[in-house]
Structures are given as C-alpha cells and as structure tokens.
Image (cartoon, rainbow, N blue to C red; front, side):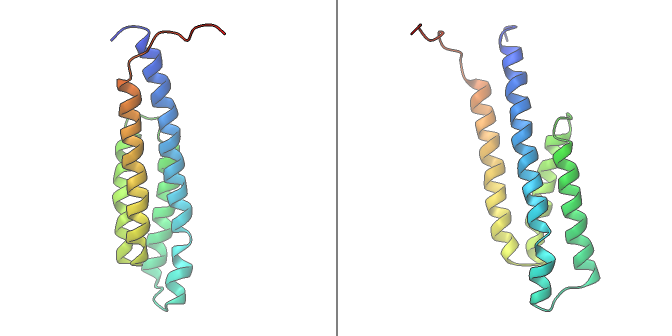
Length: 125
C-alpha cells in the first residue's frame, strides 16, 4: 500500500467508526423504549427491566469505544445481543433485523471505500 493510501484508509476508518458509534447509540436509545412496551403487555419483570436497561447502557458505552481496535468486534457482539432482545419482546426481532442490516451495510460501504482506487484529480474549472 502506498503512503498516500494510508492516510486515506485511516480517514475512512475514522469516519466509519463514527457511523458504527451512531448505530450503537440509536440501538441503545431504542432499547430504552422496550420496558414501556413490555409493561403495557403486563409482562414486565425485574429481570426484563435489568436486562434491557443494562444492554442499553452497554450499547451506549460500546458506541464510545468504536475508535479502539477491539470496538468493532465488541459492537458486533452488541448487535447479536440486541437481536436477542426479541425473546423479551418479539417486535425486537424486527428491529434487530433492521439494525443488523444497517450494520452489515456499513461494513460493505467501508470495504468499498477502502478498495476504491484513487482516480485522477478533477480538472480545473
């Protein structure tokens, strides 16, 4: 890899870590709505409340850790945990699939940006 590509790759990774962080933060906020939904159905327990609030907090913390080398892997595990909240409230399987698709799409975008070959500079004008 040329020296010109290294700063470009670092810039892409920095931008994409922000996208991953935003996704995780939105998932954490979404989880804060689950206890109210479950309570309306009459199925709220202490374990359900602790699980959803704990996972929401964990996702927000993981959002802040996306610049670390292990942040992406930990965020990916957070995705699986978010999908698993569907066992608490079945509608969360749908939301988990939506957020999972967003996560996978951002991975694809990051790879495409990294693989992009720099073209000639635009001509004046």
